[in-house]
Length: 220
Image 1 (cartoon, rainbow, N blue to C red):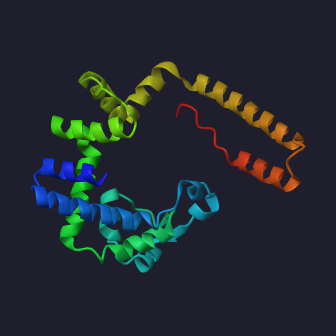
Image 2: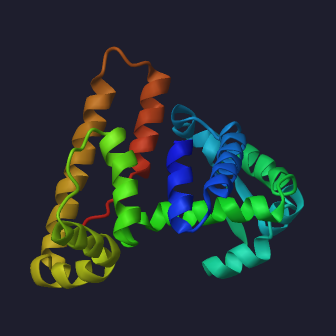
């Protein structure tokens, strides 16, 4: 992974030695942040990931993060926010003050080219494919350009295209029919939960409560 980072930074214009040093820095930052990130199985715990904080809480608990700038750029006007990983943000706030500006620049440049690699020149596209698709996943051949173009278009424009499709093929009547169907499925599932012999009464109550919270979102 570090060799891949170095290769990508070299493509960006770093010389050989500088790319190696910068890749080591990026690896160090990512490792430090990862040490305090929740594991996938921990992220499934809804109680641990439901943490409501006010703006004042964010400013007070995580002073190393410039929240005003971040929230303004995100267009967030709310006064309360859900923070899934409070402990991670605590260490992120502290870590931002332990790395130099130059080190953070290396890291942010890497984040940018790593995110946008498939939209850059062929050198970046091929390097990105070699590592993520070929090395990690065993994919032997880069998809044709037209296929990548269609995939990118669908990924970027899905929310713009979807309303047009819905208007043509999924009218209000169809939506109501599907909502009735899903409601019937929820009812059947509730009935099955109540009859389960291997589930305790307390667990059944929790399961039924969770089922009641399911929102029916079909089409739009």
